Image (cartoon, rainbow, N blue to C red; front, side):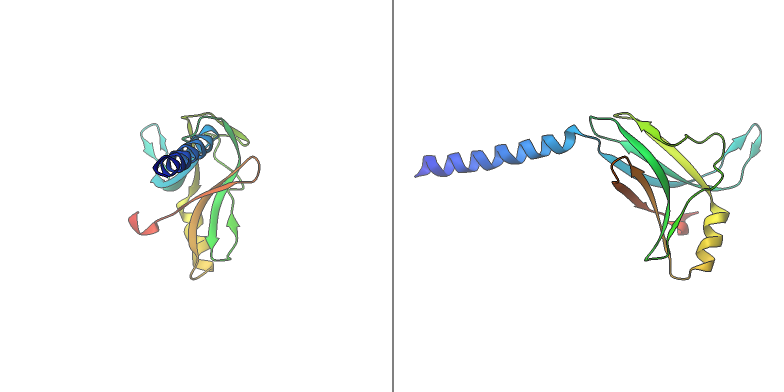
Length: 141
């Protein structure tokens, strides 16, 4: 009876380990936000919100889009005219690599003023439709 229980426990542990390894074998994308100022030589640019996607997995993936969702149910914001120094889309995200996109903070604040109660949540949309998100904390700027 003890051998049967030991075999069951080892089987469950082995299965859990295989599931973990399988999940880690593909792309695993994390998103984080920050505030940024572009620098043009000696000049400091307008404040932006940065949206960074980082691939922690073992396989590459493609970022097909990004933006800031205004939750709950206030729609998505997209940068219509991105700065020329931002990565173009679609963007290939290799394992261990990151890419960062930017939205002017003034544009985000203007949209939030039109939608009281909206909470900004940054997102990147991957090939295949997966959406990875991170909150935008405006109180820290």
